Image (tube, one colour):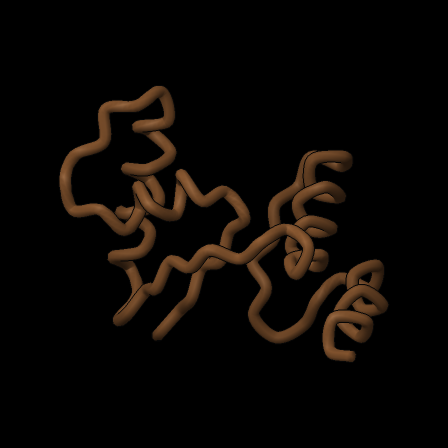
Length: 89
């Protein structure tokens, strides 16, 4: 399976793209992200400014509020559908 991971934290995306070992305070997150990326046939990490990343921001915010994580394959939660429709305009 191919996947594309977009994020609005430019520093994190840059660290995920670098081959060298990370030694920053977020080393565990970077290592985990790279490890997860290897589970796919291809995995691309891309920077996406928050202003065009409303749906992702909404999913992350709601997930933190209720303490859940999502893996979106075939459908999205109902609360995110309006944001997706706005995003497509």
